[in-house]
Amino acid sequence: MQLTKFGHACVRVEQDDRRLVIDPGGLTEPTALHGASAVLVTHEHFDHFSEAALRAAAEADPGLEIWTNAAVAAQLDGLGSRVHRVGEGDAFTTAGFEVQVHGTWHAVIHPDIPRVTNIGFLIDGALFHPGDALTVPDQPGLDTLLLPVHAPWSTVGHLVDYVREVAPKHTYAIHDGALNDTGIAMVAGLLGEHGPGIGAPYTRLAAGDTAAVN
Image (cartoon, rainbow, N blue to C red):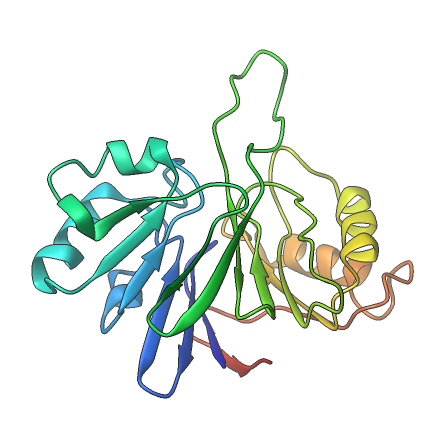
């Protein structure tokens, strides 16, 4: 599979001529959706979900399918059977990829802030996008973890423990749109090879960069 990083939390997964896009939100370049066969959305926050962008993509391509939770699906009223509601424990095939759904809730930001639903997507049993939660997928020997490296609901200490628990073969940074160059370097210093021994190689792709993943 080819993994391409787009703005903030959005990635595109490609194999042969199949394209799957995850979390094209308000901080994502519209080009991320070009040529997509299917879109997965973890939750309703603006940095992961753009109703306008998805409606425009659906209008441009009548074959585009969208898989998401009930809260996001409700905001895409009018797109009919092209929008699929899924939740924890569901499995489906889209764009030729096998997808499993893990998780239910967004991470706690503060007790006074209501939590929204959040689902993570495991692609072909190999690549996991958790959205805004530190969900541990029931998948031993995970190849690739997409790690949300900066958010108001986490610390680097949480991330270290999370990577240790998931134990992937490789970790790629996502959810970094609010970091400047100094913050990016600080996070890499702690999660990378000179950090406190998280046990998995760490890579941050710049927007538009691509890597081959299992």
